[in-house]
Image (tube, rainbow, N blue to C red; front, side, top):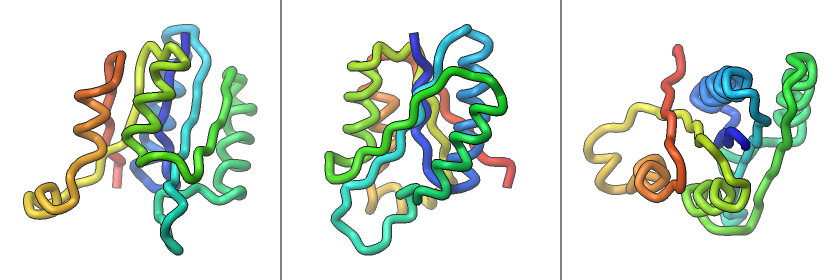
Length: 131
């Protein structure tokens, strides 16, 4: 089985990664780190650059945990990609980071986190960053 982490290079993404490592170790499972971008904008704060993923790779290697990193560019939105990968990978758990949003922000922008919570084929752990 696999613990899937939705990773973005942010405090929320780092919190999700830490929680995912803990869960994978506790369960004796591998970790699947997923970063997605639709690739349709010049600036995408959720897109992890090569240096970001190299750092994640180095840290996970040092921790001695089995892992795979996938970066999906040009696919669907993040929620769709995470739900689909969770199903195809047979994930036992999905871990995502949450950021605080105003009520208006939730209404105008929708919520990828909510879609993952409702549509994932397995339990979803949501975490907040320390900052």
